[in-house]
Length: 254
Ligand code: PGA
Image 1: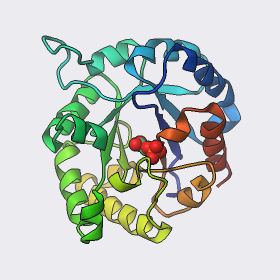
Image 2 (image 1 turned 180 degrees about the vertical axis):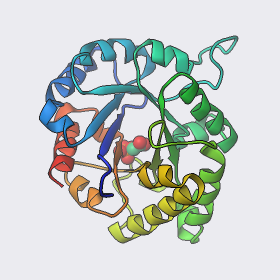
Image 3 (image 1 turned 45 degrees about the vertical axis):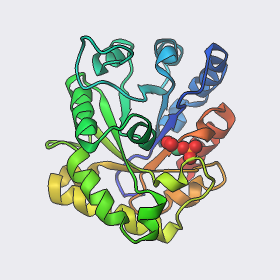
Image 4 (image 1 turned 30 degrees about the horizontal axis):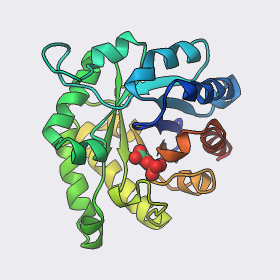
């Protein structure tokens, strides 16, 4: 954790969830009560098809809702895409950009990611900008080099703690059950913090840096206890309300 930064837990449902999953979302909305919200900000990012119903279900609760991606433009001839303005129109407040699955599946580059982050800001959304090295990059000791480049090019000038959250997700830890050691996470998060402070001054000091990749109820407390880990981006374990709320609760206790 970083002193004075409120922890933040975001659930990324990826391409999972149909209407029957809304029961889980309703349970999450009920579970994120004022006492929990006092200690931790909680966001769920369902697929775009469920976004508007999700914001309706979580209305009047502290649970916040976000999208998993957006186009850099506000509207136009881009078949299949969703703009940040559309997310805001559905009452979403956040949008994940630059997830490694989008970088891999859709060839998104740092340049695209920066454009999407700016689109989020334009629409009044907070961008959750993902960065992360591959296993080969990690094994060859190039993680900081890769992350430094991604931070320089994916995070646009003028980012603040209000409009931007950084998510460090080692690609090799996503959905694999593997995580870096707490010492490795501490070193990488310290590196990310230094880069952010150098570029954005006080905003960089206050910007939230999440860890993502195989976060589960049984390792969440250990991970949040690491310096400069201000929360988690949770994939698989965010699909079930019980697991997701257990992760949020463990962050409340830290
Ligand atoms: P995971 O995914 O928690 O299933 O590893 C994390 C993510 O991709 O955001």
